Image (cartoon, rainbow, N blue to C red; front, top):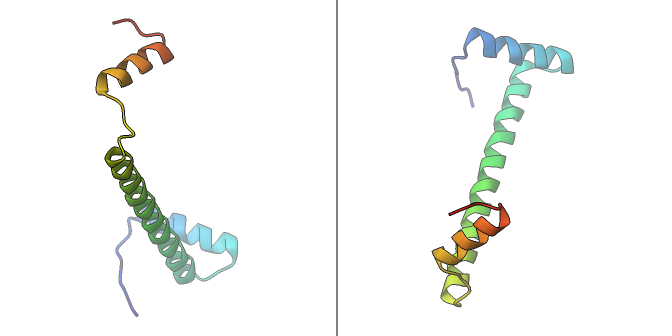
Length: 82
């Protein structure tokens, strides 16, 4: 697949320098960088969904504390005054 992306001159130079430093084709380096970023974003999204699901399950099971309890805990933990 061919995709044309317009980069700022500074970003293009960074990408070109990275490719030269690695002794690799600039298109391959760019493709691998994009793939890495997309994979990381997908993983972060999956972890966020998992955390939300766990929170909902905990809430449904009655495993939660009131906001006032949380505030009191944070005040004690960080030695904060009222």
